[in-house]
Length: 253
Image (cartoon, rainbow, N blue to C red):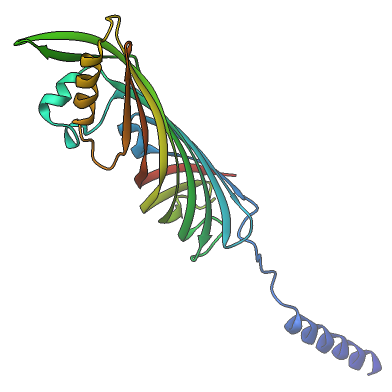
């Protein structure tokens, strides 16, 4: 009888302990805290890019991205130059690089998943090829075309905010889709450009060249022109703005 009571006591105690023991809950989703991504929409604009995201905790991550735009024609040039002025820059090409540092605050499930807000800093550099520019000097009823070579670059620093959402594409949470819903940045930029000629420019030629460059009237850009007997130097100093949107695919590990 004592053995039966002892056995029942053991069973009851075991049952109570089993009820009090919580199930084995995995509080952290996974130990995959790193994501390598590329923005696939950027390739339509010659933008070869790569970014790395590191989760610091459930709601906070750091994303660092680098992109380079291969040399090519200036997009939407006719939006800020007249058709006549655009003809003067027919073989002008540009290339660009950018570095973006982007803290992310997730408001969804976290650890790289869900909606996020991302204030960011971006450094950008744009440079041109050696392009041809023809300056028409008019005097005594005749027009003398003066061929010139142009070259230059500009650098900008800007800050902005992006809103996006990131999703896992498989059960293992290894493949990622990052949707940049909308982002915009604003800052300032500076640049130096030059137009050089093998023909000696007289003071009259220099004055007319300066007027011609100033009359380009490029919107949203402040620039000053200095001329000499070899050509002209243009200093750019003005706002630097941009917009971000697109889709990135990545691998989480």
